[in-house]
Amino acid sequence: MSTAEERLAELGLALPEVAAPLAAYVPAVRTGSLLYTSGQLPVVKGELPVTGKVGAEVTPEDAYEQARVCALNALAALRAEAGGLDRIRIVKVVGFVASAPGFTGQPQVVNGASELFGAVLGERGVHARSAVGVGVLPKDAPVEVEVIAELLPDA
Image (cartoon, rainbow, N blue to C red; front, side):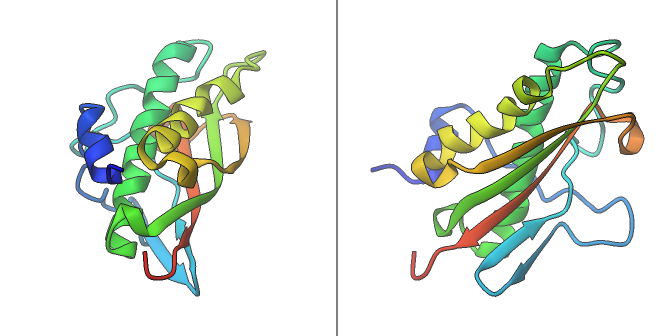
């Protein structure tokens, strides 16, 4: 059985450095056996490659890809807090989608994050989820993802 890091490589992906906070918070925090990430934007090398509302300036397909980037950023924060990806199980994902009026495809956009977690973590990536449409996100990001994960005992 391959590790989560090996599955990332098989997918042609690598985890980025943990994204620097934009304000007064930390990327992830542990309480007991739970790990909480702050909202992760689709930042790549310190920049947002895509901005705007989904259903207007941003296509649902592009937003799906940006949700994948958010998931990679969340995994980086979780790995740093847990000491390794094979030590975590995703419990809950909340995806926020900056939505143009009338756009109702938030679940399909947030599938970008959910499907990435499943591809990398297998059964440990299956989770409960909310996909919420919002008017605007920080820095005009099209999507933001936050995660609750469980730190597995002696993994």
